Structures are given as structure tokens and as C-alpha cells.
Image (tube, rainbow, N blue to C red; front, side, top):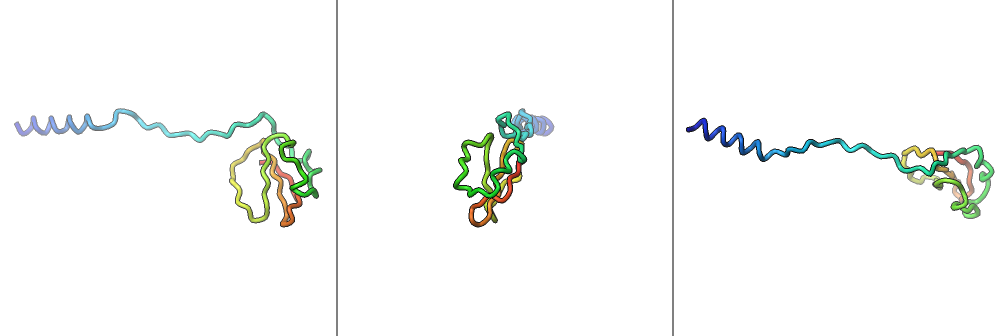
Length: 96
């Protein structure tokens, strides 16, 4: 009788466990526009004030990085990075 109670208890506890296996979530890459940044083609922007550049006219996504600004470290081959100085003048153009 004692053995039957233990077996029954084991079966009840086993039934309480989840039958689904957890699958790890894979990080997804952000969608790209198909454009691949070429910083060499954007060097003509160096020396312009950030306010004078129409960011929407540039191909692909654009990120403005000001001094001491926080930026994510994700690599986006289609993104143009405009680095500015304290006065808002573009001092460097990179991709990522």
C-alpha cells in the first residue's frame, strides 16, 4: 500500500511538469535597406554644421554622434554615423 501511494505521488508530480521544451531565443538582426554605407562617399559632409545637413536626403539610416553621447555598439552596415564637435560641426563620417 505504501509503495502504491509513492508511485501515485510520483506520477502526480511528473504530470505537473511542463511538457514543452524551452528553445533559446536567437537575436535578430535589424532589417537593412539593402544599402551598404560607404563612408568615403560621405566625406564631403565634414566641415558642415549638423543643422545644415538634411539627414533625410542621405541614403540609409543616419545617426548623429555628439561628444560624450551614448551610442549602441550594434554594427549596422547600412548606417551612416556623423560625428560632431561641441559646436555641432561634422568632424568625421563613419559606417556602423
